[in-house]
Length: 242
Image (cartoon, rainbow, N blue to C red; front, side, top):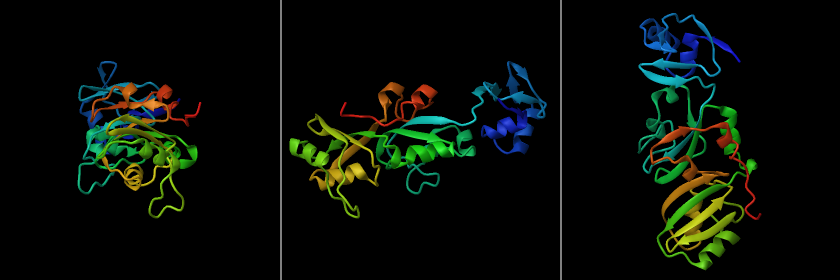
């Protein structure tokens, strides 16, 4: 456990500069257990600390781990160029505390996107060495065939890749849909693999990372949630042959 002054606590949670946080406290905008606290020097235990600012309740978190059900036409960038950034879907405080996407989804790809302000977590989850699979539901322009599935499983050669890339698992879901599971996470990989296999990706949704599924989070498009430790523990390699 650690102790911090109230102004430092608010600053660490993304409520602005230390000076601004002191002003919030002195103006009576911060309450703890229903009581207004106007002393910014007050030192408090951070673990499990709950406080209210502008009548909204918050819980202190050393780091935040978030899952977002990303809608289409949002960019996974802190400096988007053609579409709004995914950070606009989150409370403003998360931008102040440098929350970033874990990896990227194309602007027109929907589904599960992890976000955090924990640098080592972001690095670990982005590393291909961890072999955490990503599950995608792809809608195709042409009907799915057994030959298409077999080609994706055996591997296709992409431009600028030294060796063919293969799906870890692939199965037909509907006439124009396949579920494809990848470990590599190359640029536009699903779309490029489908094109190389003779079809075209009309829509793409990420439905799971490791054992954590989008369905289990029960998020509508554009909604987000904090991840519990139990949910974070599901972001692991999966043996699909078992």
